Length: 348
Image (cartoon, rainbow, N blue to C red):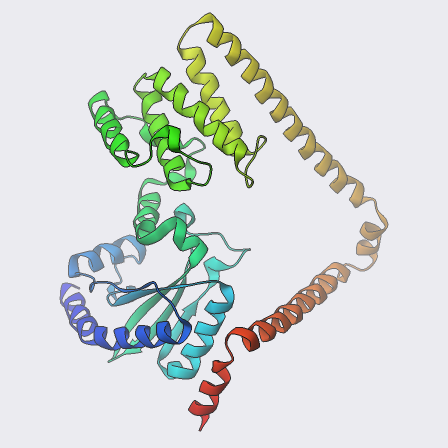
């Protein structure tokens, strides 16, 4: 197996220059600014990946030679796929879009991308295509975050602070120092609702404060974060993130064992119970609506004609596909007219 991996690494090294040229051509045609070609995967890393993901099958590892492109939006992604098909279609071995689809789950940690596998100099290379709005969030560390989420099963945590379970006080203290360094460039009093990265960093720091018994510090940060989440036009006062922050604030107020703060904690608890009750009531109402629909005319018709719903869904899907194609043709004509010229040139 090691010998096979070494041979694949050698081929990847030989194919890398061709992959660079392809990525440069795609980026130049579509005006992309974020382009990168990673180092060839090492033998040890390839073997570890094969053992972890493919039951030891080293031939299933396809990212020895890999690159990344960042596109502005979905229309640019479609243009890239069309350009790739017309420019080097015979070399394409696979296009994987599944985890970008709305009805598909993301990879652990929320990681999503499009993968294009191309064969260059008898070696399968991988081009990862990222959408800019998601790239802004994950950046170059996105894959490392995905790998860590996979390794530590973080998607299974109902409370993100559960990741700190089992750490001793010395480790916790060291993490607090690291967290303070992470937010050093953005003091808490300068933090605004749109500073998402630093808000997440401060939220992580709060967890360390709580676990280390620094409740006063946690309280100060939580109050500020709650205010910012309420100010955010995309979140607001009743959002689950705001409620989670308030739940943590209730906890740190009680932990300080002061009468005035216990009183505030009781008020917060009352508010949180009311929010939970409203959420439960909304869920019950939705379930009741579902139950009522069972006795509706449509439900009776579905018994008489069991395939009716399936036919309607299929027709609705066809309608959505036609609308999407129409919109794509319009955007294509406005932004990517050069694709027709390239297709005609390649056809000639």
